[in-house]
Image 1 (cartoon, rainbow, N blue to C red):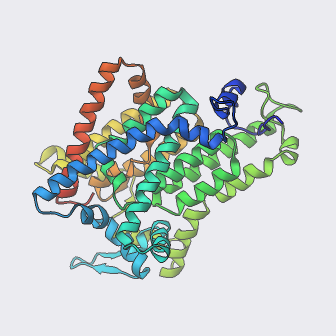
Image 2: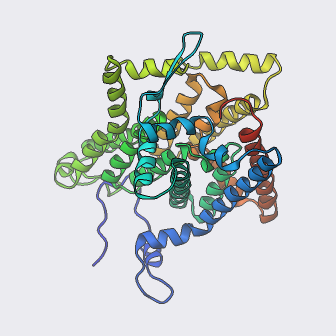
Length: 423
C-alpha cells in the first residue's frame, strides 16, 4: 500500500525514489522510516558526540589541574543549581539582596526540573546525575533534529556540517551541562521539522513542550502559528480545487481534509509558555504581570536593546572580562548570520523561529554575558556557514573544523573554571 501524503504539507514531499531507498535495506528488507533516518544521521551525531566528549575531557583535565571537580561544575554551576533545587524541593526559594533586589526561582520554567524529579523517583541517582543524563540525551536528540532539518533542505553533507558547527560553537559547552538549552533545542528542532513535513499535531505538541522548558521557547510557538496562519490564508485564497503547486486545498477542503489539525496546532503551540506565565501570575497575585515582575527581579526585561547598548558601550570604552567581549562578538556575528539566512530565503518556520530568538536576545536587558547561551537554540543561523563548509575542499574543511574545536574547547574550559560571571 503506498504511503499517504499529507494534503497540507508545508514543504514538497520527498522524492518517492529517495523515500523508497531510505526505507529498504541493502538486503531488500523493510526498514522503518525513523530507523532509516537515524542511520543516515548517525555519522553526524557521532561527530557531535565526539566533539562534546573531547570538550569535556579538556575541561576536566584543566579542572583537575586547578583542583576543581568537573562533575560538580557540570551539574551545579550557576542556573543548574536553581533547577536542581526546584527538582529536589519544589518552588519557593527567594534571594533578597541588600540593594532591594528580589530573585525568585519562579523565573525558571518547570519542565526540566520536573523531568529531573521524575528520573530520580525511578532511578537511584542524584538530581545532578539525572540532570546531566537528561541534558546529554536531549543534546543527542537535538543533534538528530538539526540534522533532519539540514538534510531535508540541503542534503546530507550540509546537514552533517550543520550539526558539527552547532557542536563546536564557543558556548557549546552548555550542551554538556545540566542546563535547559539542549532540551529546548530538541523540542524546537523536531517541532520545526514537523512543520516542514506537515505533521501539524506533532508540531503543536512539541511547541507546547518547548514553551514549557524555557522563556524563549515562545519562539517555537511563534513559528508554528505563523506557518499555520499562512497555510490557512493561502488555502482559503486558492480557487476551487488545489493551488498551482498541487498541494494546498481550498478552505472548503481544509474543513474536510485535515484543516482541523492546523487549527489545533496553532492553538496548542503557545499553551506551555502561556500556561506557566499565567501560573506564576496567579501565584504572585498579578495574573498578567506577575511573571514579568519576577523576571525584572533578575534584571531581565525587554527594552528593545537599550540595556544591551549600555553594556556594549562599557565593553568598548573600558577594560572588561573576556566573557563579555566574546559575548559581544557572538551577538554581532549572529546578527550577520541572520541577515545571510534571510537572504537565503529559508522556509518561513525557520526564519520566524530564528528571528524571534534573535529579537529576544538582542532586545532583552540583563546578563549580557549569557546572550550567546540564549542563542544556542538558534541553530538555523548556521545554515549559510554549513552550506559553505559542505562545499569547501576536504582539507580546508578539516582545518576550519580543527580551529573551531580548539576555540570551543579552550573557551568552554575558561567559562566553567575561570570566568567569574554567570554563564
